[in-house]
Length: 306
Image 1 (cartoon, rainbow, N blue to C red):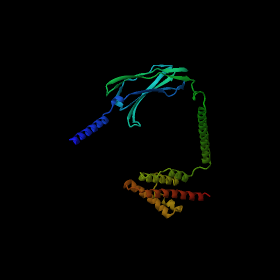
Image 2: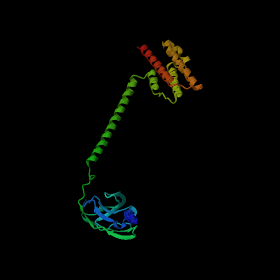
Image 3: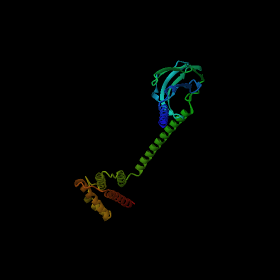
Image 4: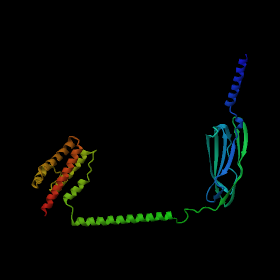
C-alpha cells in the first residue's frame, strides 16, 4: 500500500514538472524600444538617419504594432522612410524578434535639429493587452557642409575633355593618312596600271569558300574564269574550255592543268543540272586550279614582255 502511494506521489511530481516546462510563460515577454541616430553631428549637405527599433522575445506575430507615424521634427525635412522585420535565436536559445523603422531627414540650416519622441501603441495578441511606448527626444548638430566634389572644373572633367580632344586628333590624323594613301595608290595605279591577271586574282581572293553553298561557290569560280577567258582572248558571251584549249596549249600550259580546267567546267554543269553536291575537297581543288592557271599565264605574259 505504501509503495503505491509513493509511486503516485512521484508521478504527480513529474507531471507537475512537465506541465511547467511545456507551457510557455507569456507574462514575462515585454517589448523593448530603442531610438538612436547614426551620427550626432551631420554636415548640412548630408542626411540625418534616425532609427526606431522594437524587440521582444517570441515570434514576429506575437504583437500587433499600430502604424508608426512620422515624428515631429525641427530644422529637418523628411526625405523618406522604410521598415524591416527580422528574428533570430539569441545566446539563451530564445527566439527574438526585431521590427526596425528608419527615417531619412535633410538638414535645413546649420545649428541644432531635434526629433521629438515618437509614441507607439501595440497589442499583445496572446494576453489581449494593449500598451504604449514612447521614445526619447533626440538632438543632432548640423555642421558646415562638406566640399562638393562636383563643383567647378575638377580634375576628372579636365581628363575627360583631354581624352575627347585626343580622340578627335587621332581620328583626323588617320583620316588624313587614309586619304593621302588612297591618293598615292591612285597615282601608282596610273603609272603601273593593273594587269588583267592581277584584276582577276584579286576578284578570286574575294570569293569565300562557303561550306554551306559549295555548288553556288563553284559556279561563281567557274563564271570568273569564263569572264577572264572572254577578256583575255576577246571572245563573246560565256566562254568554256573548248573555246580556249588551243590558246592554252599554244602558250605551253601543262596538259594536267588543262585537264583540271576542263574538269572544272564539266563539274559545274553536273552541279547545276544533275544537282550533284560538290565536296569540300573538290571546291578547294578547283579554286587552287584557277589560281594556278591565272598565275602561270601572268608569268608567261611577263616573260614575253621582257
